[in-house]
Amino acid sequence: MTQKPEAIEDLRVRRTRKLLQQAFIELTVEKGFAALTVRDITERAMVNRSTFYRHYLDKYDLLEEYLNEIYELTASQDVPGPLNLLKHIQQFADFYRVMLGPKGDPLFTQRFRQNTEKRFRTSSTKALPEPEPDEPPVDLRLSCIAYAGLGATTWWLEQEQPCSPEQLTDWLRQISSAIAGKLHQ
Image 1 (cartoon, rainbow, N blue to C red):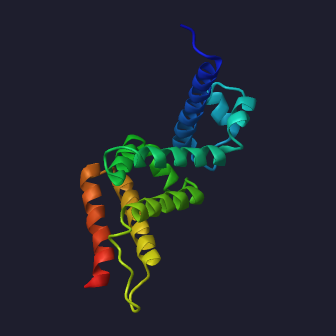
Image 2 (cartoon, helix red, strand yellow):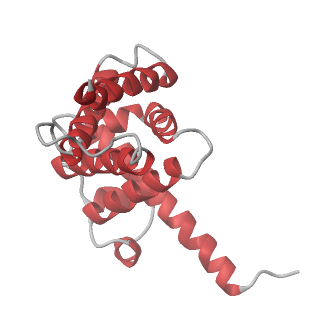
Image 3 (cartoon, rainbow, N blue to C red):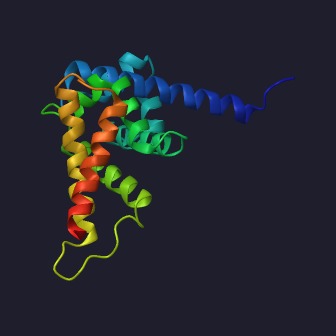
């Protein structure tokens, strides 16, 4: 049985994108995001620049797609999202250490925080009732929880992951509950 031409093309596209993402991750760790060029990525991935531009506008577009894929990947599995995300971060710790650090990109940090907030908003809309008039609004509480999650993840990476993803997830749950819970005591 022969494969349809669309299936072969789809496999080629997925393989090319995977090679480009892998090169992107490796080179970000080696050079930092700011110093990284499309030429660096294409040379490492062993593809033509025209092939890169067939898939992405620039390195920011590649980064954006990577973030979207990670969000979908970590949101769609049976393991709770935060734990799944931390396991992914653990697997690519060097990349996240760079991207969330001084050699990273502020837009990456912003999108990472926004995805954390979006994930928490989706999973806890019932857990955060509307506040009383003298209490902080729900959006502010969610923003604080997202910043706390980003800070905890950065701490975890800077400390060379002194605990398991499961332990950090538990601590993040406690921190999130404290931020949300103190408002209704």
